[in-house]
Image (cartoon, rainbow, N blue to C red; front, top):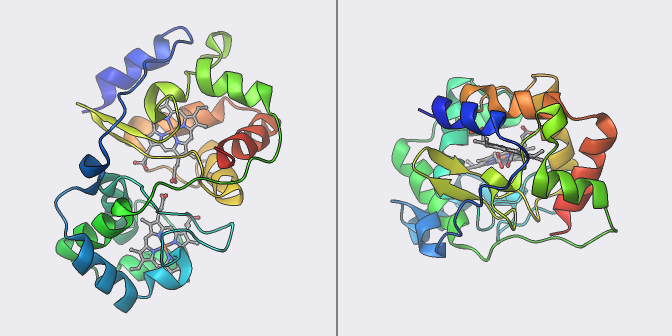
Length: 211
Ligand code: HEC
Ligand code: HEC
């Protein structure tokens, strides 16, 4: 479904498409957040991802305010093996579709994640806002929103990445680049991260984690 839009975006000059800001309620989706909190506790998700969806370990992603539709897709991908991670493949193994929706709704209902600013990263800011047309790198903001807080359009859901843990962001961008992670629609993130230099990946992780 995403192919036409992504093909279009990849050909565009560096311009932000400005995915629309989303009402917090629209992040939550069909699940029940109260039930989700209980299930997340029983299934031990909160031990690693934090009671308030803010993880205390920089390698483990925050989920606070993340789009439920995105979290559900990742859980399905861990369950099917489309996304590989030893711990998460096991954690997702026994979750039903209802469990996924409820747990995702709980995390999505929490105050949106943000992190401490650790410096100025003008190159990363430019890549985020404008991309680099010469190297066929589209603006991150075009899909992940001008504030990096994610977005949706008729094609799908784009995760919240601003305020995410720095080490986790770095590991995912490196994973996309070297294809250790390859579950994005039409490999869009593999194409984008594949075009980034390692120093740009460092700078983007530093910049995004502090927003
Ligand atoms: C022992 C620690 C641990 C436990 C327990 C755990 N997770 Fe995770 N989770 C991780 C780590 C580490 C990652 C990052 C995986 C990677 O690097 O690809 C992750 C990633 C995820 C992601 C992907 C997030 C993203 O932004 O793409 C989701 C969704 C998730 N976990 C949900 C859950 C749920 C739901 C549970 C409970 C059923 C759970 N996790 C239990 C450690 C844990
Ligand atoms: C054409 C749309 C598009 C553009 C442009 C884009 N992304 Fe993405 N990105 C996505 C989609 C879709 C996903 C979710 C993939 C999935 O379903 O696993 C994603 C996922 C990610 C993730 C993983 C988030 C997580 O929680 O695991 C990171 C990090 C990321 N993108 C960073 C970037 C950066 C940095 C840029 C700019 C250099 C960028 N993206 C540009 C569409 C885009």
